[in-house]
Amino acid sequence: MDLLISDVTKQRLGQAKRVVVLTGAGISAASGIPTFRGENGLWTKLAPQELASFEGFYRNTAVVSEWYKHRRDIIEVCQPNAAHTTLVELEKLVAEFTLITQNIDGLHQRAGSQDVIELHGTIMQNYCTRCNRQYSVAEFAQIYNRSSNHVPRCFCGGIVRPNVVWFGESLPVAAYERAYKASMQAEVFLAIGTSAQVRPAADLPMIAKEQGAYLIEINIVKTVLTPHADLFLEGAADKILPQFNREYQSLLANV
Ligand code: NAD
Ligand code: ZN
Image (cartoon, rainbow, N blue to C red):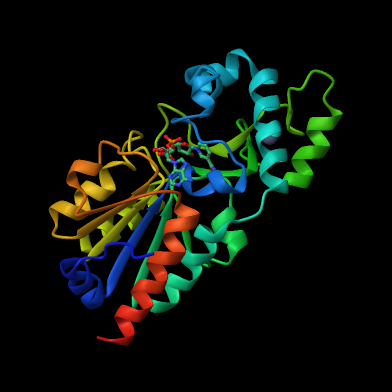
């Protein structure tokens, strides 16, 4: 199979020293973790504002805590897929490689990516909304199991929440600054498995494009980003990325 990497793409890719990748929930779909949007997306079944906002958490702490525990349980038994491991390989081929993710599942790190910019936090950590004490998965399990009503409470009495960015909350400043800077300087930008609807993460591909980057998108369906992509690779990330990498490697061998 040839990925239709055109001569223009070959030229832009072959010369690129700075490559930035932005991943979304779609990259983990093949690992068995449901996306939010799209077919079988979680938002088709559950109301986003209730489950992923601080107001919703405050109103229904037990339900939201249970939902996150359920998602954490799923993620813990899932394994990184070929798309995650291909990005570990890709990093080795590029002089300056930046991996930015909107995912909270930690699968990039489990695949072996050393330096991942997590824009939306991680579901594997929790923290106290009163004293800020951090809880690992194991520590959180202890306080969660101890609570009689599924409301996890810190030793200080405060409610403990997942370390993820909810609707209406700001992104971690340092992470976003790094992501923004890298996007500004990217020569090639790959957007993988993201519906590009959650801002400001969704702005990054366009920022890169406006600064002259060559924009490549991988998704099973077209998105709002597709009309701006220089190359749209339609298909599942775990199938497309390994093929992309093979072609990229042979391209580099011939440069
Ligand atoms: P999204 O759910 O809005 O969109 C997922 C995108 O992936 C869709 O465009 C869909 O067509 C595409 N997709 C589905 N299967 C794919 C596949 N096999 N290969 C390639 N693309 C595929 O996800 P998003 O854009 O990341 O939305 C942002 C929010 O969703 C983030 O805040 C993120 O924290 C959260 N989220 C994370 C996870 C996770 O960590 N795995 C899971 C669900 C949601
Ligand atoms: Zn506390």
